[in-house]
Length: 384
Image 1 (cartoon, one colour):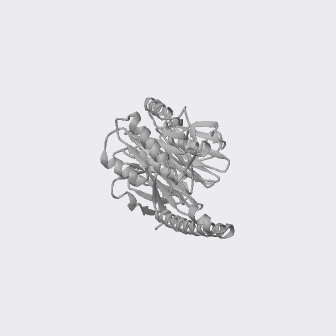
Image 2 (image 1 turned 45 degrees about the horizontal axis):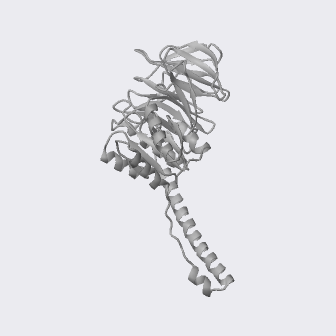
Image 3 (image 1 turned 90 degrees about the vertical axis):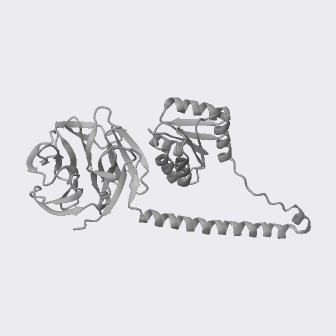
């Protein structure tokens, strides 16, 4: 019996596949979301992952994440729609097997058995043992194992080096959601708010794996900033919410702030950007009422993100696809503009901005809207 992880957003399909796999004697742990699949990998240690690919659930995103967390994990993908090109793409991404519809017990069980089975090469030393002495036989075996291990170590080192070089050269990564609204870097982590799922995803800022998810059942987050002791979010309902920086992001205070699209905290003041016919930047105290102390007209078309780089305030102008540096004393005065050529092909629309202490990052929404996973772009230091 093997432990199998099942990732499927549809509850009925998940139940059906669990029954088929269970009939073969396997123990199945079914989940509907990516972060739950990562938890299964870490806690249950499955021998195989089964992922369902559908229009609502992109298996390629889950497949990449599974192989990133567990590179040697065999992954079987079950297609909801028969598509040969899609099957080839999934195999190239790293799927061990792809099961086309309709899903039958025979086809699915055959793929699971094939992926779980490991066929090695046996070595018989029965004849040699008759003519060799005990010490010579042991030395030969030790030499053989040493050569094999040395070769395997060199191959693994070369593969890891190539993988590290490929990761270092990358400037964009797909994320496991489609409706990002805000981002922030803090404490070696990337925080991303997704308005559709009403949740904040907290990623490791190196491998981009999802470490935890905090759901906001009573609000739709559209802006986010993280301080040393508190987290602020803005909701689509027109409120700025101050949260305790704990595992549940417990709400502490709320204040009205209509049309707020971006937030930033500079260590002393809370800054907010709002949309509308006349976009504004507002300077606030980080108190319970988020008291406004100054307001300035936004020098662009439409703000989508706001960050503090240690000396100046920067914003993402979604309309012009550029970053704007603001005079900290008069934010309505731009002191520099940085274009974003990464968005020139029109495949993604920039929606939010982040600063990791060294350079800028943005997240783009796939066009047509939400037609694919959101993408994280690295832009590096300012190019002014």
